[in-house]
Length: 387
Picture 1 (spheres, rainbow, N blue to C red):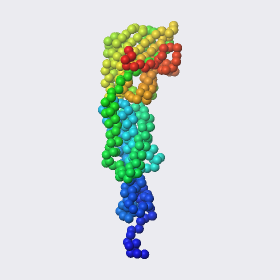
Picture 2 (cartoon, one colour):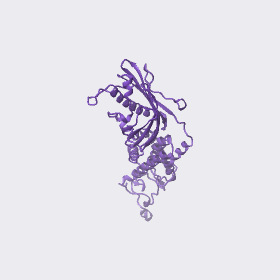
Picture 3 (cartoon, rainbow, N blue to C red):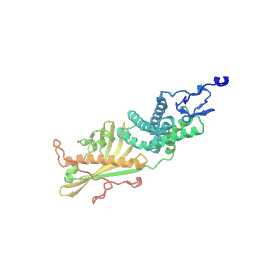
Picture 4 (cartoon, rainbow, N blue to C red):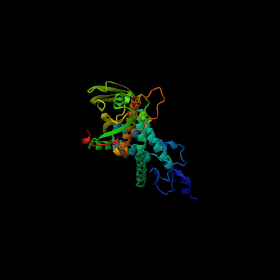
């Protein structure tokens, strides 16, 4: 054996990347790691490792933390600087999903788990920071799923493209990583430059009670006056009602409704005894999220039998959340549940149901979009056609 051969360093049977610890393919000349793109030279032992590092956390934890940070800050920034639309509900999860897919180097099953964990962590952080409620957070978790995995795939593809082009694609301090993180804010500015048409939605819910119109009229109450416990959906989606102050049957009266996080002031705008009571929302002071602008509402009573009356409760509000195909069914369900709760409270009062007695089973209210002989109980009209 020649002295030159003896002086050449022996290359280990398996060598690993210094950055990502992936096993490197055999090579006779300088090459790059197929996983992270770091260059190595088989003839220079200082450019590779002879064994795999045991510190596996560095392959996923920095990327996970960066993804959570970007998702939280981007959501908070979009929430404070513009309307709640596509940038907030789609660009944000695509952004932190892309960073997660680009900056982590784990197996596929672990990447899917990290994506779900990132969504949960971002939403938990938003709730702790009082930027979202529990119901909103649960809804966001469902909405974020598809965009996050779309972003995850984009991040993985970006890393693969950079490896194929021999680009040193270390995820930290790279301009394209920060560009991905800023994508929701850029999208928010573009979306705000084209203001959308504000839509007025009208939701109506009806219930027939075993009472005369006079008894039903005397039982009119707001959400804050209902005595029995509200359904779980209202517990999660709405602030906790406390009480109301003011005469509800005197035209022009301001009724203040108190909640655990603020107040809503309503002006009684029309009083037609035994027939109709209308009100307008004149002030909303809340310390929690406000995802709709309440406009007005009404109670209408009509006799349908000797001792039966039909009560129709109407709420009119301005929609703030887009896209409508996601949020409108949720809004309608919440409002119908609220209406049903109020109507059930009126029914118990009008039918003189004793509070100490075991309450009878709640009578189902008339839901929207169901063909019935009675007038439709839920309608939606454009802003210019709304009364």
